[in-house]
Length: 218
Image (tube, rainbow, N blue to C red; front, side, top):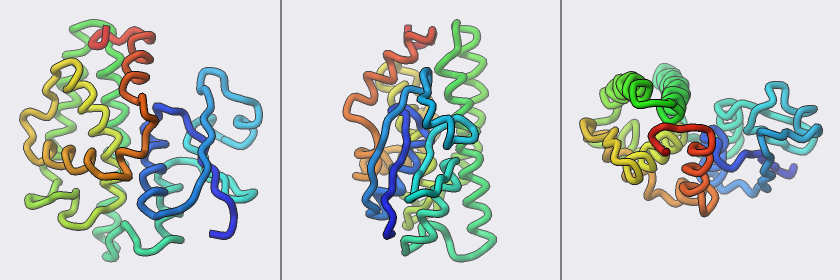
């Protein structure tokens, strides 16, 4: 790419993390600019139609939405992280969208204000994990087997936040899902995933959720 690449981010955003992983996997040089989503700068609101991150600036062109950003990066920097078969590629795109839904379910779980609310959200989240477990390749290690794909970049933020919950609050969310446990282990050991968050990510996450009234992190 001839133009400079700037990724506009919030330090704890899982959707930004997806794009960071893809940039690192592709070996694309980029700069990252962090903003405060509770006090969005005017320049950001002018370029982000949704007011959300990630936003990718390529020269004078602006892209938004992590799935779109990742598809673009994948198309312009071979080899592709998507399957070549059109039907299988469409299936991967569908499961990327499903993982976005699971991330929102996970956020509601984390932000439940009391035990009853947490348990209700946990049951819904576990149902979602069960569906995902059924889709993972039996032999692994990645979503589709031996080949790392954009579904893996989409799943890494979900697994990282699940690991934070399990490690710090004994939630055991992956206990019943051996394929998800294996997937989580290999994702979180991958260099691009480890480098996709700030050094104090876990501590900042817990502090932020506590400040916002999370019951499980109280």
